[in-house]
Length: 233
Image (spheres, rainbow, N blue to C red):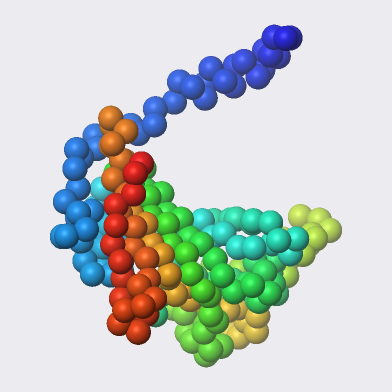
């Protein structure tokens, strides 16, 4: 067997020297006791999100969105959470984008949050629906000028001939967004993931990780109830 190239060996040494969590983790989180946890996942998500913000977690509203690609394989990217309410977890993109096409073909997705400041993860998966265009626009207009400008540029996931073309389109979009804060972005779409399963993970320094899973009780409460159970780490 040949020895790895110096660059590969340097990478491996650097990789293995990284800490898993560079923070003090709780020995036990009572909130993940099925007997004490909320009856449904949304209140616990709200609590954990507030605690992530208080702990100084950078960008706790960023999440990974996984969809099913055109060839049937998985696809994933990082997006922003726009809301989490009784309807589900909200995010937005262009319906004409790659993920927009994927969601149109198969309206199912999974979300993943990782908050290293507390050694926490949250996974949510379920069916995805689109909000009415007026609601999508209201959500867009409630955000920053930059968000509107980016939406006005459009053409997401298309091949870009040159950076200069992007710069020109972006400059024109910023100018319009500043002049027309209520401008329409026809393909901009708000999506809502209605969960069928949600998992809350609390890391432990001794690898006794706590995993609380909520899953829809299809047989009770007309399918609106939840089953809570711990999973082996």
